[in-house]
Image (cartoon, helix red, strand yellow):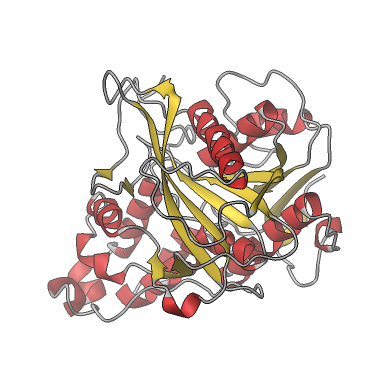
Amino acid sequence: MTTTPFISRKGLTRRRILGAALAAGAAVPLAAVAGPAWADPTAHASTRLTLPVPTGPHPVGTAQLHLVDRSRPDDIAGPGHFRELMATVWYPARDVERYPVAPWMPAGALQAFLADTGLSDLASLGPLTPGHVGAPVRRSGRRLPVVVFSHGAHSHQGDHTVIVQELASHGFAVVTVAHQYDTYTEFPDGRVAVPLRDRQAPTLPGDFAADLRFVLDCVEQLAAGCNPDVAQRKLPAGLLGSLDPRRMGAFGWSKGGTATACATLADERIRAGLSLDAPMQMNPPLAGDLDRPFMMMSAVFTRATNPEAAAFWSHLRGRRLNIRAQGAAHVSYGDNEALFPQVAKLFGWSGQQLQDVIGTLDPDQAVRIQQAYPLAFFDEHLRHLRGHLLDGPSPAFPAVTFLP
């Protein structure tokens, strides 16, 4: 096992990307770039970063789950402890006005995340989401298809909220997972977890994949009317019995995309898998072929430049798709495309400094791409709603190419 985040030979992680953003913004002295804002941390206290509003017809609800996988002892925590995870369920909701909006990250986790990059003073700028905490589930005549999400190395379960909330607004339930020891998260008792560099820490893609499979177990419990939360905390009205365990998919970014591939190969409950610029460095190596649908949204880790991605592609025997947006960076299929342009304006970055972080793909188009393509993929394979977006190039998304 390795003590370095398992992302690439170049060491790309969500934390390093944010650090690179700071370096870009600090190409000249910070005081000169940001002016009084850096001298006075309260100068922008009334300003929040914002996420785009989802395009679906339904408002979004959200609820947290504290989960413990008692089949997996946690040697890091000590004897008698087991793998502990936080997860968040996002879903189409009703009557959301009476329920508070959810933050992008819990306050303690956000503070730790920013402290690691020297940005503690920006905690008050953390975005809110369109999700409403505890809102009742919108029930219709059919159960909700489910998609589980796996984040990247040294990241957090909210870093792809744009995609998550988009799916939920269109009628999916999405469960995001905080992979303990490689994430920033906060537990109900107030403990804040941060990424851990330890040879024994379970932070390889296979460990993430085991987390995803355990979360599928928890989805099955929710579908059966059982609450998997450790403390049996109250769940939103209508959540129990609303999920469909026969229609489950998975997606992930970077290491989480590799974990998604591992979990999809190992677990037939995942009917369709999607990776967002994943390196596909699997340990152990691939042991078989995959006959279920899988889609790769590539940016840096293309099949032409990354042998592991090419090898994974060769094992796909079902419907397979590989798209790439011209000008996309490693972070381009996530929330950074919506957040960093706002940071750039706030602190006076040049256009080049912003491009150094998020690439040359137009940020507005990048957001639209991540809203449209995952939705089209899971619509087709979990709801049998086939459109034309995945058939080939679209004039609505001129940057997107289909790789044969």
